[in-house]
Length: 235
Image (cartoon, helix red, strand yellow):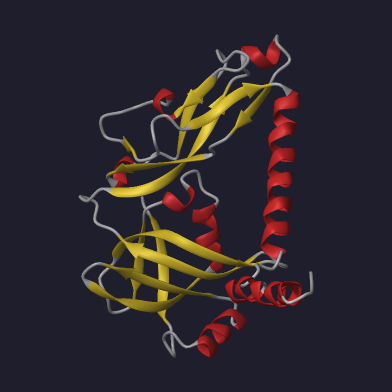
């Protein structure tokens, strides 16, 4: 059975004050939108949304949205906002979907096993990409993509091309993009230091005031004035 989210039309629609009243009542203001129909301002139960986001398929979960007086719609959560201090959900964006139309979604990459380069060669497994973008029908969206990395040796690289491929899934992420690799501890620290140095240099360059073009042109006048008395001096 698909997950069902029971929603209620929101009074005041897209008014910010109305959204605050919804939060004070213990609900989450949300918007349901999609092709063919106008966006609808709704309010939903926090427990239902949290159950979806923390499920195996997470934000890629397909569920039914039921709004009084309207036909049920298949939907997915495409964006959400949290209050930073209390980490509470404060807004949800839902998108209507058609089960016969392909979607582009991001799916988590799950690395399985311990690489040889870590076990016997003293390396460190560095996962560069934790999600990859794919395109497929809604019913074919995987909860995550599993890949065995136990055969990775020191300095070997797992790329998108090395992930499991299926006929019903197309990778949007570049095939040559690095998903994970086994590196030395020194290699792991060096990029961080280089990134920090580059950021500091960029900040310093941005802070240095650029000399305006007018100022450059004005430098010639004092120099000419200084040389003029020499031209008229007695030999």
